Every structure is written in C-alpha cells, then in structure tokens.
Image 1 (cartoon, rainbow, N blue to C red):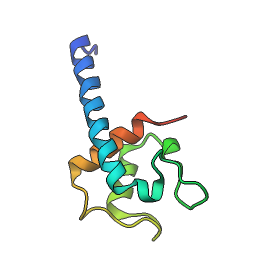
Image 2: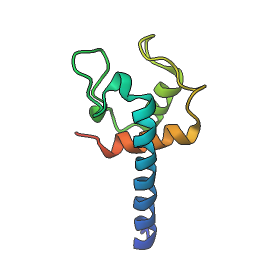
Image 3: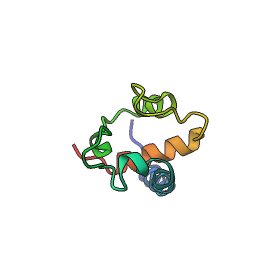
Length: 95
C-alpha cells in the first residue's frame, strides 16, 4: 500500500511537533536523572539515545518504573506527555 506524500509530510510534521513538546516535558521531568542530553555521566541511568526502538516498552517503563531504580510516572505524566517524550527520545536515537 502506498501512502500519499501529503500524508507522509503531515505525519512528519506532527511527530516534529510532538518531539518539540516532548523536549519540554523531558527537560522538566526526566533530565534530572537522565541528563539534559539523554546521557547522565557515571550513574545507573541509561543513555536514552540508545533505547530500543520499542514504543510499548518505553511507555510501560515510564508508567510503571524500572527495577526500583526509576519511579513510576503514571500519576505525573499523562498519555500525551508520555507520547511526546517518546517522540523526542526517538528523534534523538542513535543506532
């Protein structure tokens, strides 16, 4: 199935806007542990630029926390904010 170029362009614009919103949410809520550039030197937090390209895993981790080291954010960030942070993180991904 082919996707019209206009639809692809709109999707890219939407994700760009989401990433911009995600950058703000990340700076406010995530950068304290994960670092302003998604790399926190010398701590247990991972380099988020290398996070697997797995939105479901990301959302689950943000909502539920991780191994008692990352607190759950389900009561702090709403679904849209989490999706925006994912858009930001995935836009900065390094293979």
